[in-house]
Image 1 (tube, each protein chain N blue to C red):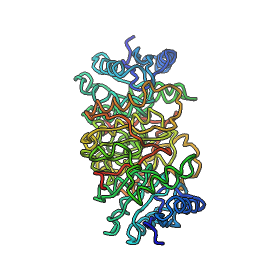
Image 2: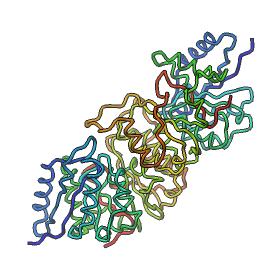
Image 3: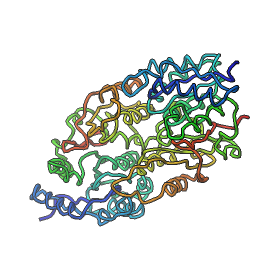
Image 4: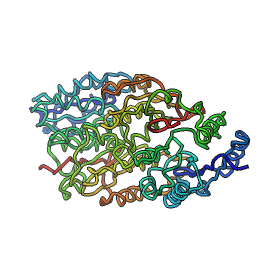
Length: 280
Length: 280
């Protein structure tokens, strides 16, 4: 039986284990039966070079190879960590028409690539769960959600408000901060921008939001929604405002609408948010 | 006996204790004798509102009051922490001619104000030790160095290469990152830019350097020097490059000269680096 689609997995940031790749393939086969995809995990995902899943050259080559492969329908980023920003600009410059027809899915550090792809006119880019989410307690639901999006564009996979918002975009706060003013910064104009993060002190998120909401580009967003801020470490002094008060403060200063909560985060409930207008 | 100069201390970020203020005044009197300054510590420094030395309104009002006070010769930022970026733009908009004649000294989080002041044509802005450095082991040397700069423009207080570099500027890496693209970003054109940090994982500094060296403004710097990166936490995986290799990598990518080490950091050896051309 032919697979429903063929998905290429690459790791532009940090590596994954071979065992996770095998578990991912078995899970996809079991969960989707006759709609099961073929998942092709690039051996680059298992490399290790310091912090990274192989050095910059290896990560760049693997991404470009799979993105340009016309037999693959989607590129799924294995996990975040750190490293996408080191290769994204050079990689995108090498992409072909075959790459433009693909779907790209990931979040966290992979947002640097998503931003750059969307900026360069790639029309099918989305923020959502990654293979590494299988390692979370209950992570199967997240991975199934991502696969249902990749295979069938299942509406249940979407962050609910995506259906009603015209154009959307989603980012990890620290990643969006870090690509502002770089060749990876996407045009936020008219989008509902959803922001999430994990493991950051509120004062650091506040500083990042200062920079994000100072951006003339971000100020053209239709509004900002707050996803989940997971595992905020306890500081030696309390920040003095809730996370929602924090974002409201910066939105008010910047003249951007604060539009409430978004159902995204570094967790198993993380929903899919396509970049730009929803294509059905 | 009249004081040599009058120094106003304010805390745009995090608070200090009253005991530290008293210790600072006594230390300055003992160390400089007939050249001793009068140090006026604004009561705002002792306020507490969540993370901050008083709320934004209190911190802004104290800074503006002292900066505009014609009887003060210098504004010395009490410490870093976090908070300067929240008040800097609004504060600078309220400054008068008396404020333009003053020296401003600090580092770390205070860099957000230094950047904004320099951007707005304030000619006497410098990166250097703060009162809080008295709490470090051996911190008296750092504070004495700062005072010698404020009182006498002592050349021994300077980062040595400042004498030979034409124009200079210094920042905490995370702070410079966070003000790029904001109303606090200074013009780096032609400057030797010195960067330091403390307590950050190398992968985070690498991400910040990606953004910093992507800036067209920073690319017009004459070059970048690496100050000390203190207390880099051990990560679950080694980064895979030394701190100097990391900065060289980004400088090479950006076409900016890497000019070696700078004698600045979050430590008692931290030297003074004026913004722009050295005035004697």
